Image (cartoon, rainbow, N blue to C red; front, side):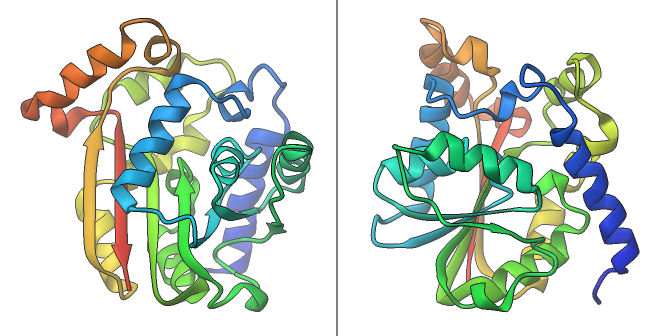
Length: 245
């Protein structure tokens, strides 16, 4: 059932203000910077999803292009979607001279018909927890996919306690805007994907270090050690999510 428009608009207003009203320093977490932390995320994402350079990719909730631009620079045919015209303008500025990325200012809960059936992969990076209704978002993402398309996400693991510490103590972060993290449990994600008609759903958790620690010398080795300990997987910081039609 489609969500009430007024409820959706109120939610979107909160999310847009969360990023559009912050300073550049407060928005540094979504700025385009190709650090070891970001490179690791992209490499894990590409490998987990066996992403081919001949596939068309729509980055939903793309923000400033933190992941869309590096993917495009690697040769992937990336288009970008976000509800914030300001963030899309920032993406266009950051991509200038680096990559050509068509952008769409659209709510994934009300996708434009011109986008339907166009993409091999609908992707998202740390955006699922900002959605009003993840299950309905999955159903709408399905409309944008080709017949054998798939969805692919990288997001936070709600079982990792570090996120709640980060939200509580990081200037500019707000529980009101980030609280959707609790909806990203494996049970809820699998239920939403299955209800939307997806199959072969997979979830893999990895990593633990925040950006500044992952990017220093020894960060990669430490995280590799963490990932080798299966007992720690449930509380890993990140989770890769994939499903196909």
